[in-house]
Image (cartoon, rainbow, N blue to C red; front, side, top):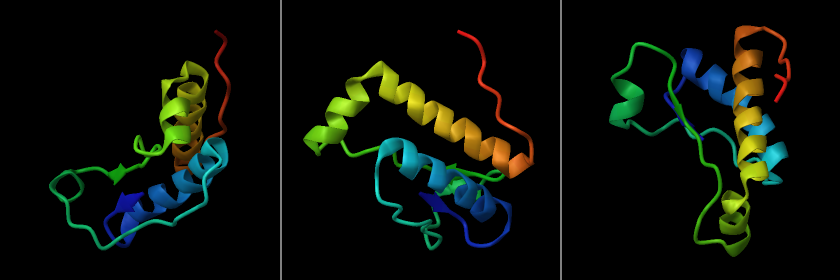
Length: 94
């Protein structure tokens, strides 16, 4: 997980990382804040880059091929964003 140090982006990343680590069954590697990537710097909103597995790991690659696993990761992102905005997460039907 990457975000600019301080401010809203780091707070958003902090909200996301726990959900992603839990849903992906990964260790929480923390938020890295020393990166100065264009996509993080030149935006008018809080921006983060998330890592959703590593395709060079057989177990992650297999999980990422699984639609149910990808849905779990999408749900984890949604929960983190809801936490950031202080609203409750609600599962949508379907």
